[in-house]
Amino acid sequence: MAWVPTTAAEHGQQLSDTDYRFLRDLIHARSGISLGDHKQRLVQGRLQRRLRQLGLASFADYCERVRENPEPEMDALLSAVSTNVTRFFREPHHFDYLARELLPRCLQASGRIRIWSAGCATGEEAYTLAMILEQAVREHGRPADALILATDLSVEALDVARAGIYRADQLVDIPSEFRSRWFMRGTGAHEGEVRVRPELHEWIRFQALNLLDEWPMQGRFDAIFCRNVVIYFDREGKRRLFSRFSHQLAAQGYVFLGHSESMAGLSDDFDLIGRTIYRRRPDASA
Ligand SMILES: C[S@@+](CC[C@H](N)C(=O)[O-])C[C@H]1O[C@@H](n2cnc3c(N)ncnc32)[C@H](O)[C@@H]1O
Image (cartoon, helix red, strand yellow):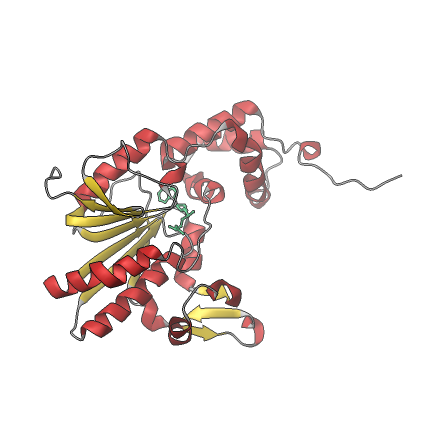
């Protein structure tokens, strides 16, 4: 006799091809995230915890529930399948450009700066932006009207972002002067954790927003960081999003994409001016 691991299939928790196609189409329609056939096991794994939370015995029951009434389940479904991997100071050349070129120019011109972290996941990108922005404003030496909007469709990821509590080892890529300035070390039950200081948090507004929905923002942004988000979108989804970004940007505003993302063949509104850095063309429509 031997002990063997139990499998999802033995518990009737295997996601059938039909149910996978249903979930895949729904996820695509609601978030733009395109999941190929090879992601079936991944989705099954990611949704297992959700089934347990809901006390459901099988994926068939879960899909039936979502078919009957999708709305109450959308947040949890999209949170479960979205990939929230991120890091402080990820792709640091973007922050170098921001600190060296973009921020000094904006501060000189008007003293008003709006940056959007679109797809901020658990907040590391937004806090990195805040550290760079605060430093630029401090060095400029005059008061500024500066704000970072940080949005994501995953409510779970946003809860982490708002709390601003991380494992201490997640700070490795943060330059030491920023680390000591902006983080507090946990003790007791929080040993091994760090917390963002409230003074840094103040630069950021975290908000749930699905990029496919209406955008409530009125003003235009000087820069949009949308990195490692459209990698999961199909061509048409990317094209539409870049067009909407163009309308939401100030004249000659910037879009920063992730290292494997590109606007090539998808928008005529932008010039590539650095590694995955795009500037809105002066003659862009609207
Ligand atoms: C891999 S993370 C990227 C985080 C960060 N921008 C970075 O580069 O480190 C991708 C994020 O995009 C979010 N996302 C995907 N589709 C979205 C959509 N339609 N609307 C809003 N956020 C979306 C996911 O929830 C996830 O948190």
